[in-house]
Image 1: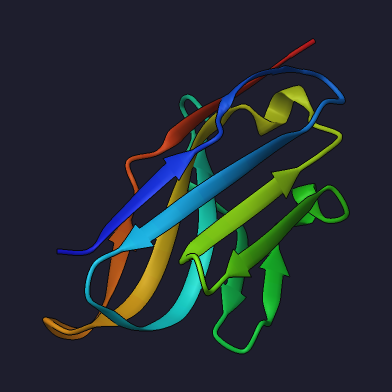
Image 2: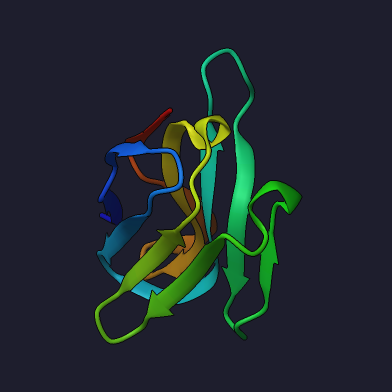
Length: 120
């Protein structure tokens, strides 16, 4: 069974920083794409940042220059470094991955989410 477990969320003041981590476990063969999504209250879930297996990254316009996605292959961890946080960054952040596992074809997996609250 493949699991993604996020950590690092919390309450931070405007302008502050947080680092989210997502730990992967299970019989993972290939990670095609990893990413972070967020969902604010009353809004749809949106892509924040993603990284392909070749290292190509994509960022939402709203976080460019403030957020950085990174991956530690040895530790099977993907991180999201967030700085200059704004109140509109508040939401539940989800780790997402498209992976090929030992038990089936490439599929999409989600973590349980971690709350980020930015207060003014």
